[in-house]
Image 1 (cartoon, rainbow, N blue to C red):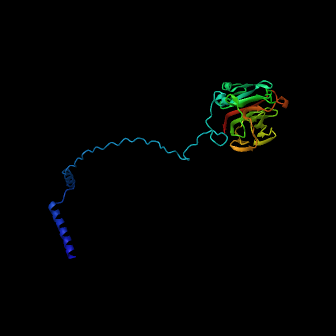
Image 2: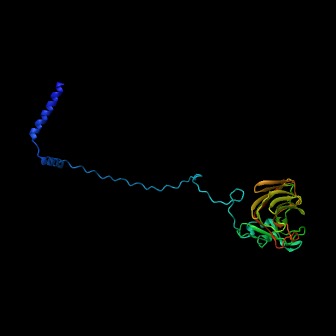
Image 3: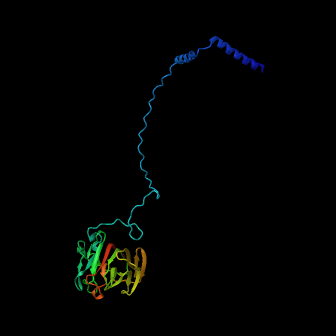
Amino acid sequence: MLVAVAAVIAVVGSVLSLGGVLGAPESDAGVDLAADDLAILPPAPELPAIDLPEPPDVEPAAPSSTAPTSEEQEPAETEEDGEGEEAEPRRVARSPADIIDASNWYLTLPTGSEGDPDTVASSELAGYDSEYYRLNDSGDGVVFTANAGGATTENSKYPRSELREMNGGEKASWDGRSGTHTMVLDQAITKTPSAKPDVIAGQIHGGDDDVMQIHLSGSQLTVKYADGDKEVVLDDSYELGERFRVKIESSDGHVKVWHDGELKADLPIYGSESYFKAGAYVNSNPDKGASASDVGQVVIYGIDISHSS
């Protein structure tokens, strides 16, 4: 304790002695002294210049190749074919032959004489166009038109603008008990006569009579068979102009019919000398009360036939 006190006294004494030596400074001398002291400080060393490297060129980021999620992706505009599927891009044809392969068919018209109507052979059908067989205004379908007072074939009382299946230059003929024979139609029935509003849009014919028909009577679209005495309803509230698809398949002594993708009929019927027909077969005439100028009309957007053994 005594040693610590003695050390403090010694320090105080030294400070007082130093003050006596230097004397009391004048007020402005203190400032000058500080300035003088700063003036004699060595100058700050100059730092060497440093060359900084230029930043590298950065290319903009490429767009990501990852497809956006379903939340990010905007819905695409598509057309539907009535079956819930995306439709194929609409074809714009320049002639009926762009839609229907003329080599598979010949055409019967409602013109000519009674019992001997005009026909168009396969070799001429590709270049044929008339009021009875023409493109529709949108260029994606072939319009078949027959008037109720038109010419009829020898074995019928009704007129038609209708295709008959061909096999090269010969009339097609196949047996419904052997092989598989298919016709697919994409079509719409657009007009019926005012009296007896019946139109047949597709059929299997066998020998001298039909095996089955796709038949519209009023608003009921059916498969008719057994010479029209029996039927299976495809659509009981059909509206004119409504587009639909039918698939008709004949094999093993049966005929199956699909309507817009749904199997509607499996019938134990066949023809031994069969062939397909499609178009507008108008089941009305002036004797049934129709005007001679009343028409039945069908638009075919696509037709395909196939045969396999």
